[in-house]
Length: 277
Ligand SMILES: NC(=O)c1ccc[n+]([C@@H]2O[C@H](COP(=O)([O-])OP(=O)(O)OC[C@H]3O[C@@H](n4cnc5c(N)ncnc54)[C@H](OP(=O)(O)O)[C@@H]3O)[C@@H](O)[C@H]2O)c1
Image (cartoon, rainbow, N blue to C red):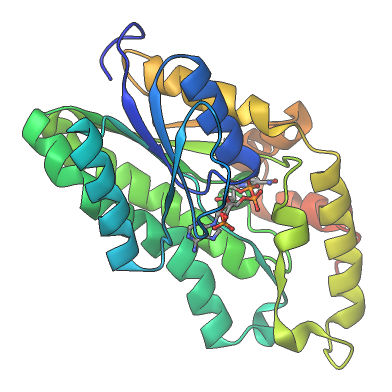
């Protein structure tokens, strides 16, 4: 994808709803050849782009979907690593298995997709990888510890990837959305231990109520899609771009300028949590 005029072949993971669907719609409306993915093949394909079955937690499934695109198009020019879900719960209430599933999808899923598309991109000495991170990958969110951990991981992973891929003419970037109105809120998985028996139950419910309200009042997924499109078509991709409400994006700046404990206090009060002393 070297200029905005070229038709590129783009794979968008998790395109059955929300941000991924908006990206697939916009990229294809712009004339790019888009392959969206979902874990379930559904009857009735979108008119503008093809949908393939792909589960980012299954290596075979990822390889099959990428092989299909390569067979049909001969190349993959761009990837939007978007598939993901959110786990909520106090760290103490989160089992290793629950944490593993969160990281398996949100982090190792990106690894599996990258490993499947990069050989072809290296051969052609061109390609773009856009990883959908989160502002929750810059600021640790209470009761979303492993969701935040997964998105913090994407920050470091994308920085590393950029440097490794640079000699091959391949670019990588991270998009950090704030709250976006999607099915992520309804699809959120609650740690099994976060029920009424949890020592954190009351605080967890208060914080999650605030988080979910903010998500439902978040920006539309099309805002993120416009950001992804402009990255795909920019001559050179920046390391990261945040997208969302100004107040949420400002938190990233505030974290760098405020003393850490002051910033933490502001964050806690936003979520209705009290600091002792
Ligand atoms: N919504 C927000 O406020 C927000 C903010 C920051 C970042 N994000 C990030 O944006 C991305 C998209 O989320 P969304 O908000 O658009 O949520 P969404 O509407 O729930 O969409 C999630 C997508 O991911 C797919 N998916 C989930 N698990 C998968 C797996 N194991 N393999 C393949 N696909 C899988 C789902 O497809 P199927 O179920 O059809 O397989 C669906 O298409 C996520 O990475 C999320 O962390 C969202």
